[in-house]
Image 1 (cartoon, helix red, strand yellow):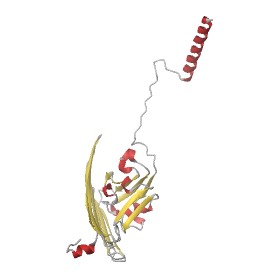
Image 2 (cartoon, helix red, strand yellow; image 1 turned 90 degrees about the vertical axis):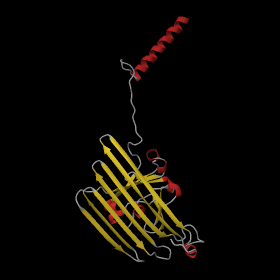
Image 3 (tube, rainbow, N blue to C red; image 1 turned 180 degrees about the horizontal axis):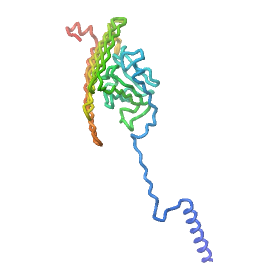
Image 4 (cartoon, rainbow, N blue to C red; image 1 turned 60 degrees about the horizontal axis):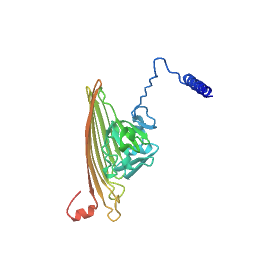
Length: 286
């Protein structure tokens, strides 16, 4: 009886081994080696909305911030017109959760929870705007939890060219802009001013941008000086508020063969006055 059980057990084991060999054949040389590779910077699975430069030129806008309102899913919050003060969120994310890039360099500062769309190049210098919808923190860091807005500037041309425009409107609205490029150097600037549609809605916004391609070096810098009346922006008790946002950024990219180096800086100052009337009584000025 014991021998019969042993023989039956041996046959069962042999049958199981034979079945396993048929299901998962193992080469005679040993186990099969399987290599799995992947990258968090690989295929982009999130949808991307793009506004091309040609589309930007046809939109009834004078600033990059307002142009973003034409992208589905972008919630633009403007406290003053013409991008005087603008914040943005994507699909319900907060202002701090949207990363703003200019040619791959972050320019927004989430420490105050607003003033997202500052330090941007003039509209004339932009080649396209890309909006990555949905969380992108795995690729771009925690600042991109709600999405990414990428501003791609125009690549300088070797051939000389230039353009200029002037806009006039009601309430003293005036905007002048110019762009020139030659020998791998591009420079653009714009200046907008308006008396506002009511008291304390005036605005003055100057922007400048330079980009140069010098061999293997890609260098760019931008500056902005924006001053505007912030009527009832933070308090109904002191409606005659005023604000000035100034700053700039610089970026350097060097690439040679497999080697690459990138660096940059960003600086922004925010000067806020709760009441221009109280300041005037105190003998000060904005």
